[in-house]
Image 1 (cartoon, one colour):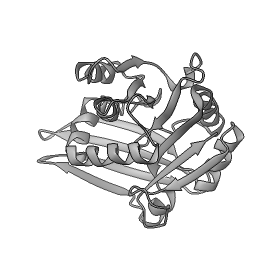
Image 2: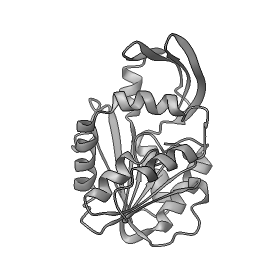
Image 3: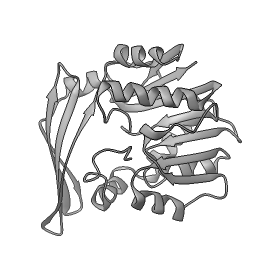
Length: 244
């Protein structure tokens, strides 16, 4: 999940609540969607950027893909390696901004579950340029994140998420002009505060993201929602598919 930013957010507390929010059936549905929209087949080489504990990377490896997962969080990478689905998946500690050694290596690259947009616009675009370089001539980049228009329509300045008697509280701010969200998250477990983290994330409109992608060499950019159909205001999630 961590691409080189906000180390105070991506902790054991984060993973504890994510396990409750993302049951196995959701992961399976997401894997099936990824395979379908990215047109993956057994043997496809896939780069999972901000792989976290390997939820998606290991799932794709079990389906026959050859997967490399990168994350800056050593604890996450250790967890991913401990659950590695055979020899066709590799995990390493690496910042997405340093993805300089790869060239024409992968048939697909993934930013899944809000792992794109941590940095300023120039740096975010530089990251896209590095990923474009890492893809083969027929490769595809998949970016999955919140649908900005749905978020604005359904904006909640505070949000509580429970896991049994434990919970975390999000205090949210939206800069509409900059297209950025800012979040302070407080974790409470066993009746006590176990962590407080802050983060910000860029939420580009589809047209903005398409412009960035085309500026670094992608020719075709399409947008779908979480069900794989054409993106609409009703979709909570936005998925960009970019091809050379």
